[in-house]
Image (cartoon, rainbow, N blue to C red; front, side):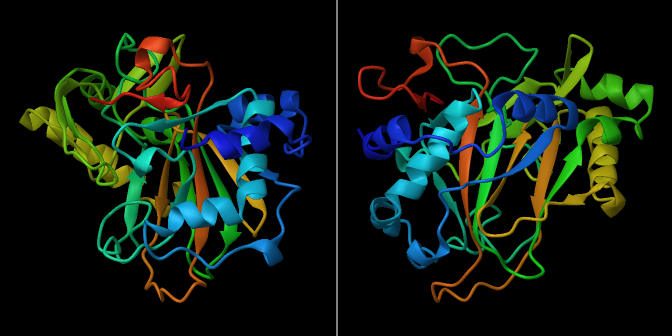
Length: 304
């Protein structure tokens, strides 16, 4: 099993979450994000920042204790780490850093273009929609652990409720109708477009979204007009919160209640580039029918 070694480390790691589970979940639900520290982080033990995808296995083995502790913190927080079929070669932890031959892509391993506000994996079902029996859903949470920072390069968060407060009732109604199509993000190996989806969904009086600046579009002129208004509002920088991450700091945020973004920068590919580790999380453990190989891995979700 590809993630077996670091999962075994996670099982025996204690106190990886630096705050109580209750405080973590309360702040996550109320504020849509929580910033915390990973006690097991040691900058002196890090390898160089990866520059090619093939380097991931080596990095995972050399930094195994760190990777295991990172997953352990998720379990302590009551979150179930997941990876998606066709993305990240089955690894639960993704290296968010510039990768050679991907630097021009608009993705977590790109660099040269602004990564505008988006929700990760927006083509999958979101909260409030009927769950697929076979396919995994859009992740509930996304966590970024900072290993190396880059001055002037930020991950920023935008809260969905603040964006919706600036839209008209008509636009909100349009955005909640199944008149949009969504393209699978560039980080996946296979392309896919799903038609007839809403951009926002309400459940228990709470809004959730699959908005992706780069990968969502309207199927009618009216739909595209409302989506364009939402795009425009998400670029209002006074709505952005630049997450202040130092090495060893992590941020966990609600993927469907916020959007995140990263500004462009020029990579050096010299082992010192900005480097974060990403983990997707679910609030509840996925059902077996959504797993790609349930006998081998309880964390790998189907997307095809």
